[in-house]
Length: 315
View 1 (cartoon, one colour):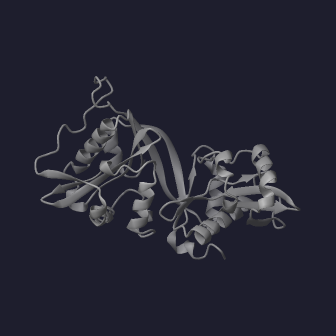
View 2 (view 1 turned 45 degrees about the horizontal axis):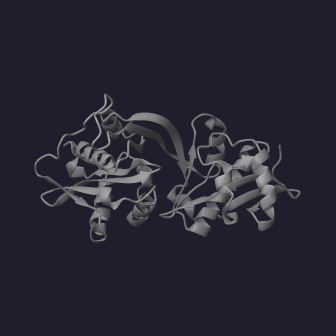
């Protein structure tokens, strides 16, 4: 596939279904893919983009819309790998996510293994590197069970002078304002600043696994929030979907206190594992989780469409 000028990029149509199923069964795997496999993604015709030459499908991309005006785009599948065609599919899929789903955070997760084939296509499509995420796990001693050698207490008790508040509809604004304050000078994916509203971010967090509001907590001192930890149930484990500390609370062990409470909440739910994802450049957070006995299970490169390119995707 040396010349791709005669290849049409378009949304899939209903009559493409049978051919697309066969295409995904026979086309080579996409390089460096870190998303779900094709069967789970074939259900929605409206979110497939195809590359067609002479009536034959020679490539396809998928858009996975998410809560909070975000969308994920797995690496496209091609009969023969070609950087320009992959870039066109990435860009068309991003334009579809923006136009049809009003997505503001459009991203692709990449396995570092084999990424050298994929990154030039993302760059040509207008994506930029956002972060390298480290996915961490640790065992959790379920409340009432006998401690094992892997158990490590992070912080035995809440320090004097600190109190807790759980999430509720009446406290929504207080939680939202606290999250916004934790973003100040944050080392965790700083390029996301201003890309979406706090309300969008909260919606994304709510839909990561099963929303468990009793495990979303603020820690306060003198009635003023110093930080926030939010745990959901994701595939039978406690998932720390967000942890942040406001600027005036940093350097005081507040992050350790929040993490200890999150681990305790996970244990009280009877969940024996806990997970999270963190930007590897966030050195204080990486150090905090390492000391709490988390271990890395994988890394993913995250590329995204920056804000200044969102309005020109369809051009």
